[in-house]
Image (tube, rainbow, N blue to C red; front, side, top):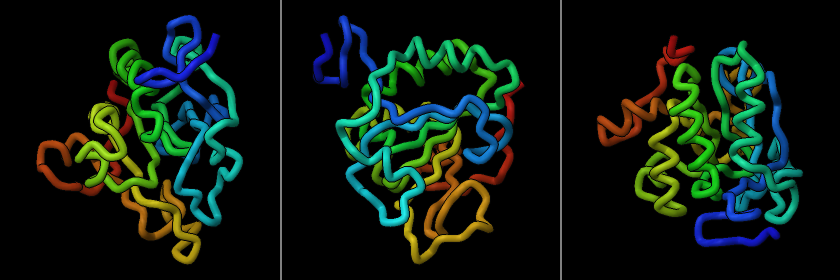
Length: 188
């Protein structure tokens, strides 16, 4: 039986993630070949969103962290995993078990996340305390809402000029957002 609990959706006691879909071999959601996880649900509803079908809070499907990890493990060519959406940080508590196991079991993969929230908001636990915990498991954050009037096809790994590429580990040490310098690759 499915139901929503304090930290996310559950099926038979296991926390699950509401997803819009996945891409097993994305080459546009960060450097190298990536497993891209598109979560379902986004309250921001940016005009011009590249995944408008992911905005509904009730659509998609419920998937366990284990099922997603099995998909990641199945591709030995991956350089990393990208959390996108929808809005991943609106499901931070549900994504935490997946991200924690990903880090523990596949530490050679880098983790990117796309969010309409700014780094500063996530670092201060918006929209929830779990958002900060998830942020701490991310290598690069592409932050800020998509703005159609600032759209550019020339920008690497982002859709509009207001969005930033943030080096999360360096930012957490510095106590402020530090720009990503295109150095995060495979951790091998």
